[in-house]
Image 1: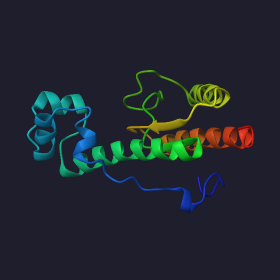
Image 2 (image 1 turned 60 degrees about the vertical axis):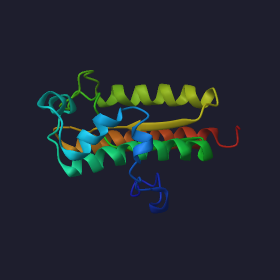
Image 3 (image 1 turned 90 degrees about the vertical axis):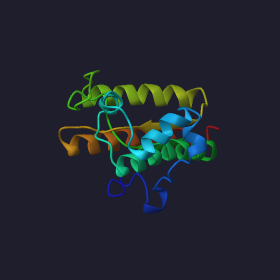
Length: 159
């Protein structure tokens, strides 16, 4: 993204992990305790799709923190993107929607264009990222950020 001229290094912000108070808005305290202590049932671990580890807990909290950060940035800037994955992509291990890269670009352009046209704030959060080829996930992220940047540039001053 930096090399493509879409953002500067100063525009990229590493997320802070979300605190328990944020996680508890979506999960009950017992589940959070069991996640943190590695006491999930085999069925819960299968549902998550990744083996439990302390790093998984940190990743999940940072993912939530990235979403919160993107929402806060969108309040200031009108649009923000939190990068993490590309699940709808056909080449993704979880890509049940089977969308092509072109299909994802069409989806992104349509959704972001309509939000900008309606003057809605946008915090785009792309989570997961189980692509068979990491290059595909990176390309999809770059594509989404490029579309958002182009739409922001086109609508600057229209506000």
